[in-house]
Image (cartoon, rainbow, N blue to C red; front, side, top):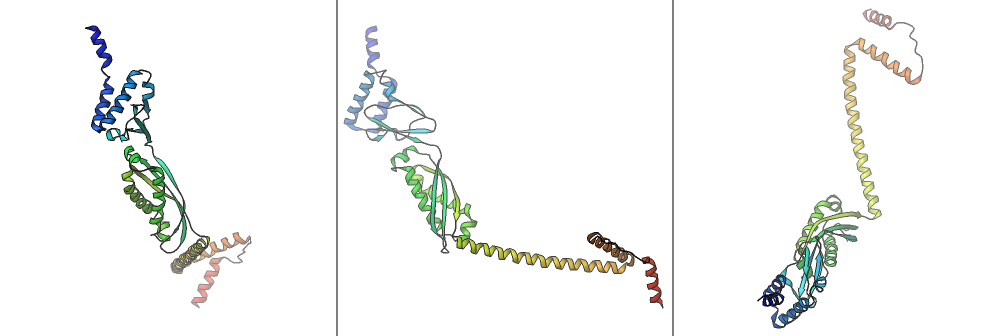
Length: 288
């Protein structure tokens, strides 16, 4: 009885082989597929445990593995992270990186809506959220995304004027992101962010814009100067009215002015008579 149990324990396949066979049953690989998979399992079982080192693959935390068995995606989903089992004769796998990728768009010559030629470059941040779609639905997901970003950038900026392009970078970047996200969804791509880095315009256009800006600044400075002169004249008028009502205040203002002039010109001012005496003489003459 013990001998029979030992023989049976060697013949019965392990649990991981049973699970893989059930997955093949769900895939429906056909009779020939079953034969090939059975031979592959038999080879692995005969050469165990040496074959396990060739069959076990490690998938990192930021990676997923798309396993193909006889040309079909196994279980219609990606494997990992962790350890996965690959049969040596019937299985192949492709690792997909799920980390965010930076796509630099080189400077593109764009004709704006108001017929101005500009050079615009940008950057697109995206990541793969479905490894199966990225492998099965497109040949080279990174190259296709790069070309689509270039085309979308030219198409969107071609519908904007130069003023809109310079003033509304964030709005344009959001519209480009929405277009890219909807187009790449079937490829398993999620566009996280789009940025417009630099906008270059011709030198002649830069000179014209600089001249317009200088003229605008000069006109504003003239308006501000005119408003300042008007306010200053109003203040002087009010001050003259206050001084006219107070003769003593007028004399004090006169003395303050003389002190200021003497300090600036480094001169000496001599009064031959007191100001009060001159003021009294003036009042007598007016009374006479």
